[in-house]
Image 1 (cartoon, rainbow, N blue to C red):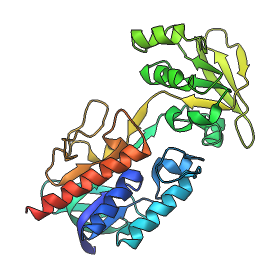
Image 2: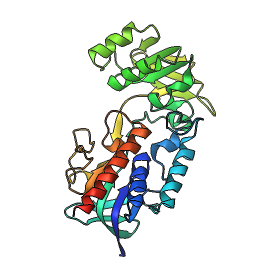
Image 3: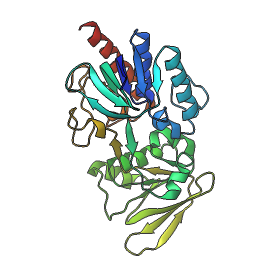
Image 4: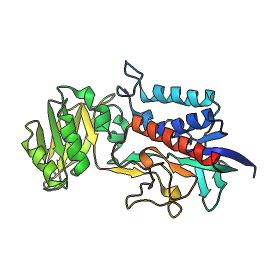
Length: 307
């Protein structure tokens, strides 16, 4: 098996990983991004982005990430369209197996992201990015004066519902149980907001529409009765799962699987850094991920300079 030696290996090709690669390449490091079969991360599913600096007009997630990929390539970073199958972190250089080859890397930036938890309905998958979203702060702006619904009952769902009232004319909060799991103060804010209608004991049963969402069918879990909400926007807010399976037992994580980092974005293993949603439990924004990718990469460069 051929072995290639890298100064920096970036695992993941969303905003965090590609920004880390840009800074690594500009810092003179032999840098490679293990992007998997589709570089770009979760933004590939976002139709219009209006909150990324530098774009006065909306840009699709695909177009934005294509520009960032090309920028990384122009600066000298290699894009490897393979998933990492295994990584050894016992000592530096770290060993990475991907696509039938083995690589050695003096530093690693983990930027594998996190996935929004989905309901698993076929119609949900069909309309994701076409009215069905996992990010209220990303897409809420597009529903000014319209009715939207949020699926979930925890803190994330409550915060999303409250956030959406800034734009939407009405927000339905659909929860499968007869009481919310959100913090008491959030529940009080929900109940006092005239724009919010909480629908208990219901689950999303179907998403209607061909090219874009037109309505959400919800079902009463006690009676099986159904109700149709005529809404062009549905936000799934049942949590996120960090993509950290590859690193379990090798790098310290919290109880939910998010990688723990210090103020330099360094993990529990010296020379290995993490950036973006894989270590961010709060913001889940492209610009935040890019910023953390920058900081992780700059600290990795300093780490190498001091060795």
